[in-house]
Image (tube, rainbow, N blue to C red; front, side):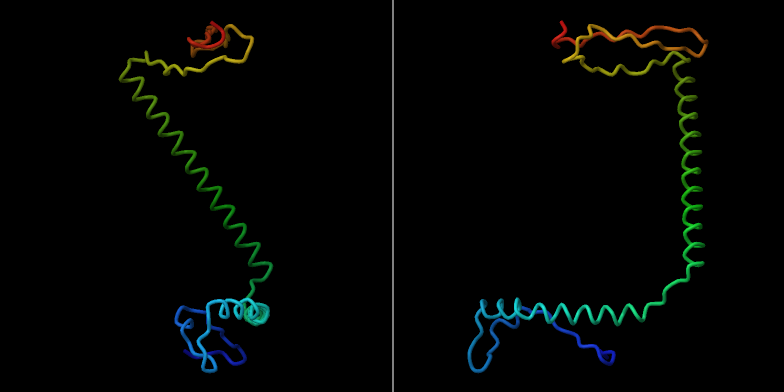
Length: 149
């Protein structure tokens, strides 16, 4: 592996370093740990110097390129969002058509049970307008077993 001039690469401490002989004595785990902690500031400074060197080598885009690419990303995102919206609309209309065809226009939404616990309401009335323009009240009564029995 060739190294760029002026850049020193440090190697990480590995398990292979543990049994190593230093000045005729085996290093203990505590000694290795302490040397790693004490060498951290020097290694951090070396890392930051290397980052600075690499950042000088980066080919930065011009302001015009950044604006152009940002506009492209926004336009593509808007197009994809619109396309997904169209697909959602088409598929939902198709499913409603299939549902109306199969049920003969008589399908009803599934009831959604919910309780009115903790309220002083005995019932809730929601006005519903049908496709023919008729207004029909929808009454929601408290669920069985709740406080409002």
